[in-house]
Image (spheres, rainbow, N blue to C red):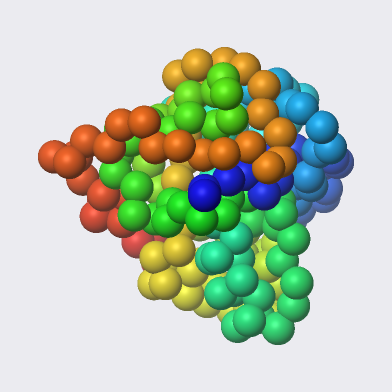
Length: 183
């Protein structure tokens, strides 16, 4: 069964040497039910709204299986929220999703896959700065990106909720097919 392992939000903006000056990438799991609306998880924020958030990037999903792949290669634990994701999933290949694919999260929320995540310098600094030179390229080349999601139906979700693929348009391009490597 595909399910949500965690629903994550930012707990604190942190200083960042990038152009914005702060980052909201470090998210943490929330206990209990969490409200999801058109702009994502209630009480979550994005520091760089030019590149993150909004209706087409309301939520970011990342798979536990991909986090484990990176944890092994980086030699450290990568808890839910580490990648800046709102939804840590298990049992669903999020990178095999098709653009326009619709998922139901729990009993209420419906989301639609809109685009792949494009890694950036803030993400590279989050992973380890100088210790992980070439991180954006490395992350991109592995194609373990995770999708951004649009909220189609608002509601409440919680860790442990089932993820059900409601519609998978066979003629739509796959998430990885449309990805353009920034490196």
